[in-house]
Length: 249
Image (cartoon, rainbow, N blue to C red):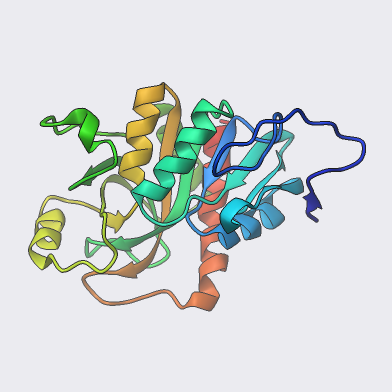
């Protein structure tokens, strides 16, 4: 059950940022970040206790509740690295988030990576991120937090989920017209493609916080296979549970 912000027995001091309407105390230090705000709602209703709506600015829903007694926020981040950068920056700088875990879908890029498999992104390659202006000529290599990554691997093994650990590709376009680049990604062992993780890892490194991307393979670039939309939520449950276990291992 979801409780809306503003319960009469709760008094919050004003906080709020340009893109997040939550007040002081309404954002947990552990934040799960799906791209889709409605996936945030589903995950909060499914996995959190006493979840309440804490943000609906611009329709980008965020909820805070508890998991096994631990405070957790699930905040939508939108599509692409520029959108994620906005929310991650505000969560870290203004709300004190210390652990940020992206939960989302990816496209498989290796023949042994199957639909519904989980990918744990050790590194994230990319052509461009919002941080490119900072790094200039340097090709910075963003990576996951080892503690989160190793804990996620243990949680996935315990659940019996088929899991792949390695590099992914964060694209800045959805409708890609670079088959030559995809071929090189596959050739160099990239497990899957998505659109947000590289910038999340950049920001985590910059602000000395923990980050990880836990991804469910929803389609495949090599085979053309895709997970039917009605099955996605059911398949994404493993990913959310792995993320929650890794955050509090």
